[in-house]
Image 1: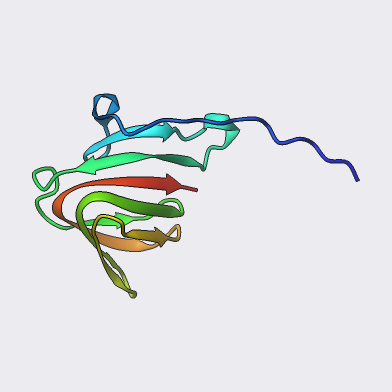
Image 2: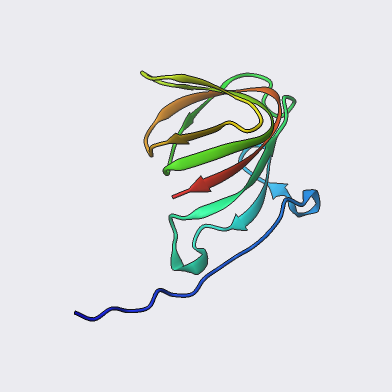
Length: 116
């Protein structure tokens, strides 16, 4: 049996408010963009959203497996047919692709996310 060494791809970044760019909702600072390292399904970054940008709850179909970690703020995420999460600084949650969710931005929030 032969093996092929893994392709070397590494990336490093730190939270930097000057690197944020517009996203579908709110702003994003990419650490790893979709497709980087020849991995189209894997990406990660920081996401910021304000109560002004999302004054009402919104429905979101999870398009890829997603794991989030709240850095600051407060989100409430309800999973259709499942649990409801009140996420505050230090909280984390993970969702399978295809989950139907409803998000409420309770306070301006910054999260770190990974899509896979």
